[in-house]
Length: 101
Image 1: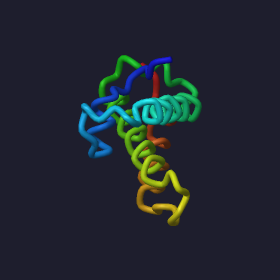
Image 2 (image 1 turned 90 degrees about the vertical axis):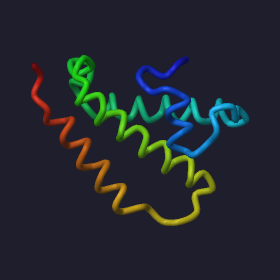
Image 3 (image 1 turned 180 degrees about the vertical axis):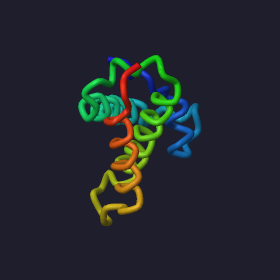
């Protein structure tokens, strides 16, 4: 299964990995799919906004933030990044309350 709107090389850039580093591609793609699924489940009318570039930019930003957090905390050490949690919650609320065209 391929991610719907995220791109592997962009995610690798966010993770500060070289694009030719492929050892963890399967794990990164799994995180990408999980982040996209999270966004689409959190926003009831997500499909109705897929053509809005601003909406999709915010959705992609949330996905990238989630992926970086999940990737960096794979060993489950450390606490929750409260600033990031607030940012993600705020962006999700904006997406959830965006009126459909």
